[in-house]
Length: 369
Ligand code: AMP
Image 1 (cartoon, helix red, strand yellow):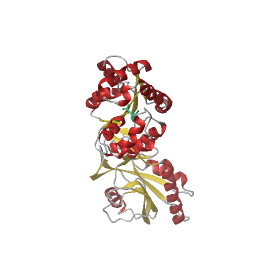
Image 2 (spheres, rainbow, N blue to C red; image 1 turned 90 degrees about the horizontal axis):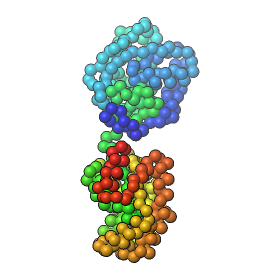
Image 3 (cartoon, helix red, strand yellow; image 1 turned 90 degrees about the vertical axis):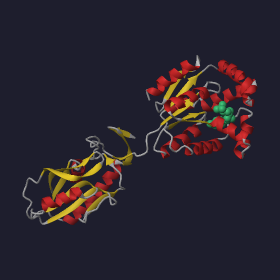
Image 4 (spheres, protein in one colour; image 1 turned 60 degrees about the horizontal axis):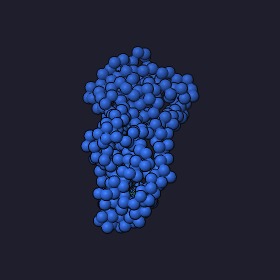
C-alpha cells in the first residue's frame, strides 16, 4: 500500500501486465498501419510514460508529438478541459493515432476531436491504455484498448493524484476502506497482555481479541468449541491450529467496521501467523507490529500463581500446568519473534514494573508505528 498526500492506494496493475498490454497494442496498430508512417499524438501529462514505452516498442518508422490538456482536479474528472498546448505541426493528409493513458468520462476525448475537426487528417484513431467502460458516456469510437478497468480512481504509470504518483512504474487503485492499525500483543503467559490490552484498546480505539478469553467464554457457555478447547486448555497445551484459526477469523469478521485490532494470545504458532497475514491481506490490511512484553520465567510463575488465587482459572492454579504453558510458549510460540523480526515488525518492551509504566512503554512504541 502507498500513501499520496492524504489518500491510500493499493497495488492494482503490475508493470508486467502493463508491458504486455502495451505490446499487444503495438502489435495490433503496427499490423493495421502496414507501411504507412503514422503520427502518434500523446495527450500530456498522463500519457508520457505510455507514449514513451509504446513508441520504443513500435517496430517501424513513426512520428511522435504531444498536445497538453488538463482535466482532473483531485480524484474527480472535471467538466472543464483546458487546452494548454495545442497542435504545433501541420497534419494534413496524415494518419493520426491518439495515445491516451486513460479514457474515463470521454470529456478529454471530446476536446481531442474538437482540436482535429479542421486539421484535414486522413484518419484519426484512438488508442487508450486504460478504459473505464462504466464511466464513458460519449459515442466516439475507441479503436484500440489496452486494459478495461472498473470505475475506480487510479494512479501510477503517468497518472497522478494532485501531482503525485506519475513516476510509479505500476498502477495503484484508491483504497476506499479506511486503513486499520493492527497489533499483535505478544509475550509468555502472565506477561500482562490482557491488562495492557484493556488500556491500549481504549487509548487507540481498537478491538481487543483475546483467543484465551473467547475459548473461556465458549467453555462457560458449554458450546461444542468450548468442550473441544477445554481438553487442551486444562493441561496447558495449545488448542489445534485449525480450530483456533477458524475461531479467530470469525471474531475478526464480527467487527468489520473496526479501526484495527489488538490480537492477544494469537498468533501462537507459525501456521497461525501465516493465517493472520492472509486474513489481513484479504481485508486490504496488514499487521503493523508485534509488541512483546518481556518478563522472566520465575516472575511469570509467581504472577500466575497469585492470579490463580482469584481468577478461578484451572490453568492458573497448578504450578506444573503453568510451567507447561510457559514450555509450550518457548517450544511453539517464541519463534514468532523471528517471524515478525524478519518483517521489521518486532518491538520488545520490558514487561516488569508498574502497570502504568508498562503502558507508557508500549504507547511510545505504538505511537511511532
Ligand atoms: P491465554 O488466556 O492466552 O493464556 O490462553 C489460555 C489457553 O487457551 C492456552 O493455554 C491455550 O490452551 C488456549 N489458547 C489461547 N490462544 C490460543 C492460540 N492462539 N492457539 C492455541 N491455543 C490457544
